[in-house]
Image (cartoon, rainbow, N blue to C red):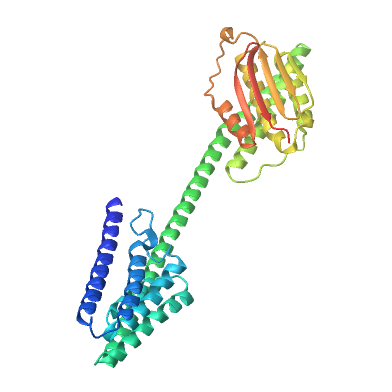
Length: 387
């Protein structure tokens, strides 16, 4: 790619040097040949005009820069283009015998690449007029004029064809990008559907079997007149399994691209019921301070996910440790009290994906998330700026 850009810059420099040397040589030769037979002021005016055209050609559009566009006219100032166009007409009009007529091709070639058709035609008028002026001086004026006009027509055709080809290539490249993105989206959606099917088979079926097993155990406990505490724990475990089944189904629907059914349970009610079930099923000591319902509605879903994951981790990895939940309008804090270094070992394996997922969800909602050991134990905290 760099080599292509360097080659392109070298080509631009070569073209400009050829035009520069040819123009200066022709001008100097004309002055030398007609020094005593042609008005000096006309040579002076022609010299100023040819200088303006060549300066515009040599420094226009920063053609030497790496970020310069492929088409020279993109980035030209309107003033520079008109100076080159009118300057070409002045040069031809002031030079003897219509000399330096070829300089008119410089603004014509530049103008032909303009995206605005009206501007392009307007810029071509002065140099084309210069061809008519040159035809008045030459012995084969009409023939020369026709040749010049044919060359201009060829430039128009070639330039417009090249522009259409470039536009077609750009359009094809854009379409390829769109097609590639659409294929990527379809592939991602297909992978999500496959994951959803696997989750359904593993989680939903497993949880359904767990619910049936817990219900059977609860029925057997009642038939055998088991203790009330055992029956309550079995009942609470059944409710937890049912809640997990609902959450698994919502996750499957989300992966399928379907909106999960909105839960009608407010956050405060959900938290109260969940804490009570955990107390009944595990005997955990859980204290709640604050009102979850005071949180903004757009944060309550994230708050529910954070509380569910944090409570589950606390009971799983630190069974028997007291748990404190503090809620406010812009903050949630859950502390598991104890010495983290002496936490009891659990048979449950955690890959750390839950906390990573929580961090992403909290940050995506505009909040800050921290989780780690503290002076009191293990602390999970999410906070948002006051709205």
